[in-house]
Image (cartoon, rainbow, N blue to C red; front, side):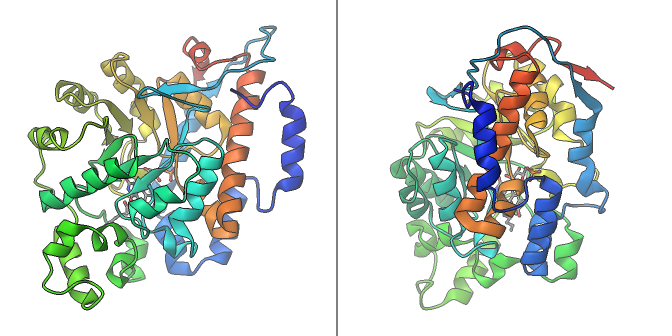
Amino acid sequence: MGFGNDVQLKVYQHMEENIIPVSFEELELEAKKNLEEKAYYYVAASAGSPTDARRNTFAFEKYEIVPRMLRDTSERDLSVELFGSRIPFPLLCAPIGVQSIIHPEGELASIRAASEMGIPFISSTAATSPLEKTMEAAETDNHWFQLYWSKDREIAASMVKRAEAAGYKAIVVTLDTTMLGWREKDIENTYLPFLQGEGIGNYLHDPVFRSRLEKPPEEDMKEAIKLWAGIFGDPSLTWEDLEFLKSQTTLPIVLKGILHPDDAKQALQHGMDGIIVSNHGGRQVGSVVPAIDVLPEIAEAVDGKVPVLMDSGIRRGSDMVKALALGASAVLVGRPYMYGLALAGEDGVKQVLRNLLADFDLTMGLSGRSSIQELRSKALKRV
Ligand SMILES: Cc1cc2nc3c(=O)[nH]c(=O)nc-3n(C[C@H](O)[C@H](O)[C@H](O)COP(=O)(O)O)c2cc1C
Ligand SMILES: CCCCCCC(=O)C(=O)O
């Protein structure tokens, strides 16, 4: 399902509906003006130097789209099937924690916007709203849950079980954030929102987490935050631990943060159901390789056995086309929808997603491609 052959008309209708900037760069500037400085930098910055922050988006410029002509692209089917369910576009909302620092409705506004467009929302462990409440706010049930694997594995197991009970359709395990990366701006700003109790809603509502406390968080929040800080991540995890996770759920398990083809092969050997090629938006390792640059060799290593998703740097429809042409089954978008949220809540997220999809749909049609399969052959030139 594309926007249909009246996409041009629909794009013009969208023009009138736009309430915030359309270009990513303007959107980011506007969000910077509107947000508290600390919150803005928490979202925008990366690990490493300010130039590192632009590596992911620059990397897309190495690829150019080669359009084809006279191919009847009046009807486009841009849908994809992931784990037995069809989604209208190859796009998901990346898991983003602590959205309450951006907008009071946080994740609830974002999932409402995503679900209205049929886009799966990946609900973060580090959310402010507990996962059950977030799912209740959605209009559709095709959303996924992202797990930060706690040092206390019973807490990790409990969250996975809660996610399954709440109706999430896949578990995304983020591998690249067993510890928080070196983020200069946040350190200068002495800013870690979790220490003020933001972004720990899933823990505060978790029966196992609560059972580890002498007093409930409502009576002693300081102790709850201290416990959270002690158990958040587990850098001792290895591939062998995945067996434990598999024993806890019947949902598909997707590994997020894969950047090396050998790790992709390991994921297959350990029976994982999908991978996300991602460098966490450059937030974890300074000078990290851009995800788009390693996507082709990873897609080759996986050889179609499981879906390969990709994120880190998707800003426009042409970026989506490039990632799909380089082997992604679908992509995730992060910061752009955060800036939409910052400027206009649910409507802002909706505008960002709708414009990204309209741009993608037009770019596909004008490049002579009516489906994602048609992107697989000679769609790009590397410069
Ligand atoms: C403010 C912020 C919070 C994030 N929180 C999470 C999280 O809780 N879990 C996770 O797996 N990834 C998290 N990420 C990473 C995103 O899921 C995604 O990998 C990244 O944003 C993609 O890059 P992009 O922002 O360039 O689109 C976060 C990213 C940002 C910007
Ligand atoms: C202790 C750190 C929690 C980080 C959770 C949010 C996140 O992934 C990010 O990139 O920020």
